[in-house]
Image (cartoon, rainbow over all chains, first blue to last red):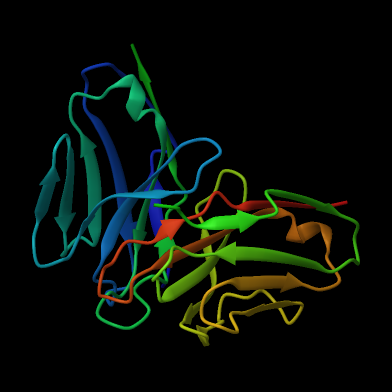
Length: 115
Length: 114
C-alpha cells in the first residue's frame, strides 16, 4: 500500500537527448509527489514537485507528468547534459497532513548522460 | 547559508556497542526528519520531530533505535546494541513547517557495524 515503484533502475542517454523516469504508486492518499536528485557523496536535493490537481509541471528542462487515474507520474529531462548524471528518486507523501515530509521513496534511477 | 550538518561523517563500531548520530538542522527549520538509506536504495523514513516533539516514530525498526530533540534544534539518533544489519547511511533532513516545504538533506553518517 505504501510502495512507490520506480523504473528503470539505470538509464544511459546521449547528450541532448530526453531522459524519462517513471514511477507508480498504490496509496491514493498520496497528494504530493517530489523528485529528488542525488550526486555521489551528497544528500538528495529537491528537483521539482507536483500536486495531483495539475497534470504537468515544468521547470526549465525538467517536467513532471502526472496521471492520477493510472496512479503514475514521470520525470522528463529535456536536452540532457553530462552534469545531469546522478541518481534520481521519485517520492510521495500526504502533504495535506502534518507529516508531508514523511516521504516514501522509489528505488532510484542512475542516470548517465554521455557527452 | 549553512546546510544540514551531520556528525560523524563515518562511524565504524563493533557489534553490540551503542552509537549516537548527531544532526544539526538549518537554523529556523521547525521540522526534523531521520531517514536510513541502504546502498542502491531510496531513503527510508525513520522518525520526525516538530520542534522538540517526536510526532511519528513508526519507521524505527525496533526498540534499539531511539531519537530525541530536547531543545527543538539538534537531534540525536541512538542505536543500542548495534547489529551488522544496522549498517547503512543515516540521513537527517530539516524543513520549515509549511505544506510542501522541501526537505533539505544532510550528507549523512555512514555507519558500519563489524
